[in-house]
Length: 385
Image 1 (cartoon, rainbow, N blue to C red):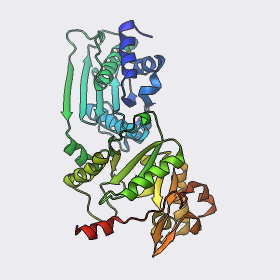
Image 2 (image 1 turned 180 degrees about the vertical axis):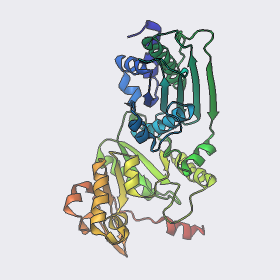
Image 3 (image 1 turned 90 degrees about the vertical axis):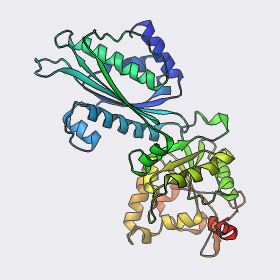
Image 4 (image 1 turned 135 degrees about the horizontal axis):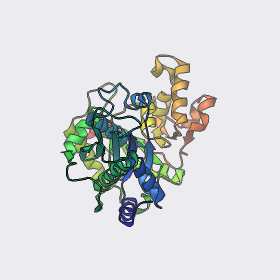
């Protein structure tokens, strides 16, 4: 482990609520070792990936980059890490994506500069830095240490933790920084455009949920949110026993134009008013929601369950239906099913023929625990909306 000042910074990082995913290649490897050697690392580090080979980097980025070692590649790595952190983090915790790539001293002399690029992405900020080292001044091990110090400082800054220690740069070595700040509206535009996968509004007033990893998710359009929604999620949470109850609204629809930023904000106000957490995503389909929220329990009505297991919604292909829902099952997701009117008849899970391979994925909410069939569309009609 490094000196006491650095350890103090890492302890402060681990004491902050921020949870991070780190993607780095070509240097700064000591930073990960330092982070995980200090107790409390699991509070901070959700995942760390080192795409060191060319093919590994291509797989991570989903394309061949114009340059493997560049500011743009570091920014893209940070954004990917941020989206990954959203999926793995506890609801309501601030998340951080970290991207690093470098071209440091190696076994042969380099024609180009010894340099590296750092990038961090949070909900409201994308920060990038470029550092060019003095060639021949240090060994590879020394360059690793300098890049690790600076990466640690970048993480501390993103966690709003002071980091006052010497990074080891000399006077001729300049840290070039650029930063872009986002407001709520710009962040929501990024969500609709697919740059980020979801945004959490942690309005829940319950204080004992901060350490829950599993989400209990009630998805819908909530136009408007009503007592039936609130009661259904409450009952589902009591059945699950543990987990973070939250609502989820997709800004992108399967067969309608996406919601505008102002429409999203109007919907969000409903949840703020009642003190319930809502996640705004850009995935209208449950098999995609399962990828966003692995290990979650999705709360659905019997009408939705009927559609989920109907081959009609899979181009008439029964095997495709089983394949897609098995994919959901493999993410660790389950479906809690509440009673609803289906074609004018009140039905519960037991009224449906669930394929045997999927049966343990569906859990019934007993009718005696929940038997409210309130329709948002009926509420809109009555109120003239």
